[in-house]
Image 1 (tube, helix red, strand yellow):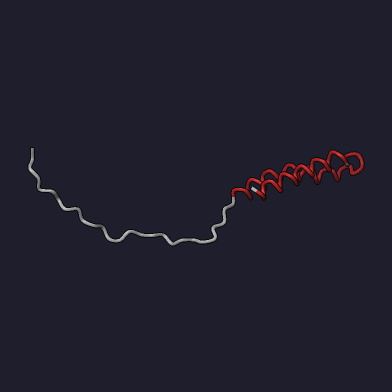
Image 2: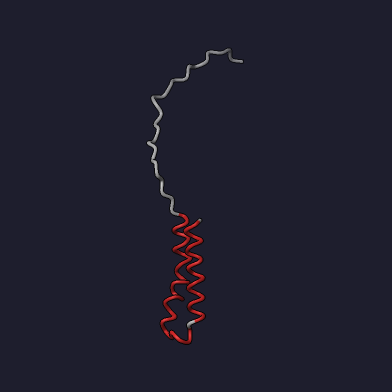
Length: 75
C-alpha cells in the first residue's frame, strides 16, 4: 500500500507542476502530464506484485489407501 500511495502522491505532484508551469514551460509540460497518465498503471502493477520470501515445497500424498468393501446385508 505504501508503494501505491507514493506513486499517487508523485502523480499529484506531476499534475501540479503541469498546471503551475504550463505557460512558462510550454511543450515541456507534456513530461509531467505523461507521468500523471502512466503512474496509475505503474502503481497498480506495483501494488499487486507479491514477492514470496519463503517458498514451501509441494506436499504430495503418499500411496493410495485401499478402502475395504463392506459385505453387509442387502436389504
